[in-house]
Structures are given as C-alpha cells and as structure tokens.
Length: 283
Image 1 (cartoon, rainbow, N blue to C red):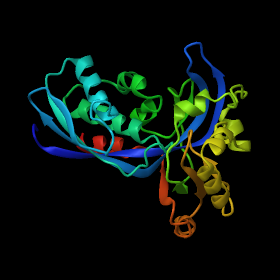
Image 2: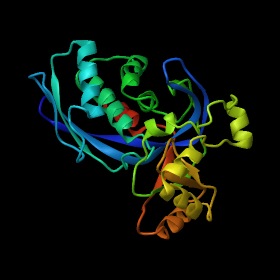
Image 3: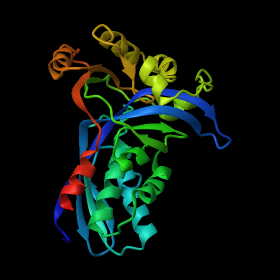
C-alpha cells in the first residue's frame, strides 16, 4: 500500500574462513569462503511512493544518500524493471561500518528483496542477485538468504546448513579499508582450493589476517584477547573478530568481560535470512 512504512531486517554475516585463491585480470580476487548469517541486524524502513522518487532522508551519519548502497539498489531495481513507483528509505544501523560484517551489502539486498515484493516486480532471486553484484560482492549471499559456501568473487554460492552456534563479535572501534587490504603486496593470493568436506574436517584460515593485524593493531589486540577464551577469527577483511560457542550462556559470559573500549555483541548463527522468513509470512 502506498505511503505505509514497513520495517525489514538486514542481517550481518561472518566469514568462517577466507582463502584468497587468485587474482583475475580485472583486478578482482578469487575467493573461497563460508558465510554464516547471524541475527545481528540493521533495520531498513520502506514507504512506497507513487511519484517515482527514491530518497533516504534518515540514515547513518557521514553516508551520503547518493552513494548509499540501499539507494543505489532501489534505483537499480527500478531501472531494470521499468517500475514507475518510488520509495522513501530509512536505515537504522546496528552493524558496525567497516567491520567486515557485510552491513552495507545486506542493507542493499534487503531493499532489493523488499521492493521486489512491494513494487510487484516478481524477479527471481538469481536476477536480483545479478542486479546486486555490481553494488558489492557480498550482496548475492544476502539476496539468496542462507548461509553458504562461496567461490569466485563471492557470487558462486552453495547453500549449507550449519550447526547451531552463538558468536561473540568484537568491534575494536575502527573500520578497515577492504581496498587497502586487497591492494597490499603482503596479501597471500595463491591459497589452494579446498572442498566443503575438507573445511569441516580440518578448518581454514583468513588470508587477510596478517595484513589487517599490521594495518590495525587494535584488531590484533582483540584477536589475542578473545583467543584466550576460544579460537578467535577475523571476519572478511575486518575489523571485527569473532569466536564460536556451543551455548548462549558461554558467549554471554565472555562478551560481558570484553574491555569497554570495544563494542561486543552476542549473535546467534542463522541458516535462513529473516528477510526471507518475513517474505514467506507475507505470502
């Protein structure tokens, strides 16, 4: 219904491992990773409008609406479908920016999924993911809406069901530039390919960790602190770090002990995106 504001979740993700397996001629990197969706989420508000305008009057400080991925996603869908409706978007951030949790990509994916429904576009998920890929390599996994094994630049996805886990996530207080990490001459770019089975048997690593430790000493400190309680990992190119626990109470106990200079979260792992659950309830 035009003018009615609806509220949509935009979940974060963790990279349970991240191997850089090559570099393409266009400068993008070939990757292998395992995306774990978590219940830490931004909230996207959407009100359909009939004048065709797309605006975002409320959003995170310092992010120009014209460069906001959620606005760009709405305009990409509008252009691809020829829809004449517009939308007023709002964004309440809970996912730290520049933390490697995929917040901007998730916001964009939620806009694509929600407006595809609200505008009555009815594009299949594969087409929405293709629209989202130029906005960010992580957009397709959020469009697909499940935890997934990923290859290519992150767009070749195989849905997986992961065991229930609770995660302590620490944000050391500053973001890390993905571009700077991937441009670093120190980055390993020739990790051998592994199979899903091999990962579950022996695990993996984050090839970006050494570079990020050098660029952001606070990340190294957070990894070392969290590593005293469980195996600690970097997500994506950082700066957030995380550790997995089998019980919520154990995760809560560790998070409560985190130094005040860091933001700490306890998040439950998800196999299905809450956006997809919301769309099913609407249907």
